[in-house]
Image 1 (cartoon, one colour):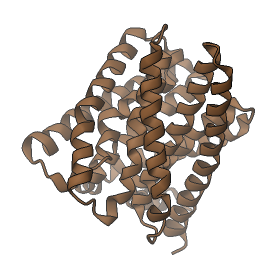
Image 2 (image 1 turned 45 degrees about the horizontal axis):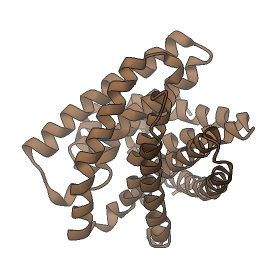
Image 3 (image 1 turned 180 degrees about the vertical axis):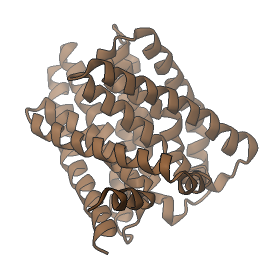
Image 4 (image 1 turned 135 degrees about the vertical axis):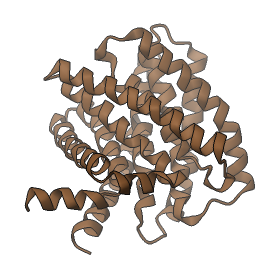
Amino acid sequence: MRIGNIIERCENLPVGVIATALGAVTLSTPYHLIGFPLVRHIFSLIGIVVLILATIKITLHHKTFAKEYGNVVPASLYGAYTMLMMSMGAYAFTYFPHLGKALWLVGIGLHAILIVVFTYRNVIKNFNINSFVPSWFVTYNGIMVSTVVGGAMNEPQLSKIILYYGIAVFFIIIPFMIRRLIMVPVPELVIHTKTVLIAPIGLCLISYLNVIKDPNKYVVFGFYGMMFLALVYVLLHIPKFFSYDFHPGFAGTTFPMAVGVVGSFKMSEYLAKIGDINLSLIVKDISGLQMYITTVIIGFVFYNFLKKMFID
C-alpha cells in the first residue's frame, strides 16, 4: 500500500481504535508482570502504529477531526489520543529516555488543553444532559495515565498535582454522573460508555499507590472497594453490552477493563506488602479473571475494527 493511500485512509480512522489500542497497551503491563514481556512489546508496537496514524489524521485531516470533535461523546473519547501518547512515552523512556520523557510531557500538556477546551464547549457554553455520559471521565481523569505509567520520569511534584486534581475532579463529577445514569436513559449508541466508570476509580487507586510513599490504608481500601463495585456492575451488564451489533462505541469497554486489571494487580501487591497475604491472593485471583475477560473483550473489539476497516 502506498504512503499516499495510508495517509488517505487515516481520515476514516475511528477514535474507538485509539481507545482500543490504549486498552491493549494498558493490558500489556499485567502480562509483562507475570512473565510475558513479548506481549508488552507487541501491544506497544500496535500502540505506536495507532498513535502515528491518529497523529496523521489530526494534523493532515484536521477538518474531519474538527467535525468529530464537535460532537460531545467523540470529543470526550479523543482524550485517549494523549493518554496513548503518555503510555508510549513511558515505553520509549526505557530505550530513549529523552524522547520518552518528551512524549510523556507533551501528552500531559495536550491533555490539559483538551480539558480546558472540552469544559468551555460542553459545560460552560452548551451543556446537554443527554451527552453527559461516563466517557467524560476519559477527558477529565485521563491525564492520570501519566501518574500510572510515569514513575521513572522522576517528576514527583507534577505527579502529586495530577493525582490531587484527578481525585478531586472524580469526586466532583461522580455524584452528578450517578444521578444522571439513574434519572436519564443512556442512548444505545453510547451505552458501552457505562464501562468507563471503572477507569477513573482505577486511575485514582493506581496513581495514589504510585505517587504517595506512605498510602493511607483506608483510602486504598476505599478506592478498591469502589472499583470492585464498578467492576461487578459492568460484568453484570456485559451480556447486554454485547447483545448489540458491533459499532465504534464498543471501544468504550476496552481501556476501563484494562485499568481494572492493573488496579487489582496493584492492590494485590499492596496487600502483600502490608502483610495481608490471604486477601492478597484473593485479589490476585480476581485480577486473573479480569485479565482473561479483558483479553477476550479487547481481542473482539480489535478484530471487529479491523474487519470493518479493511474487509467490509
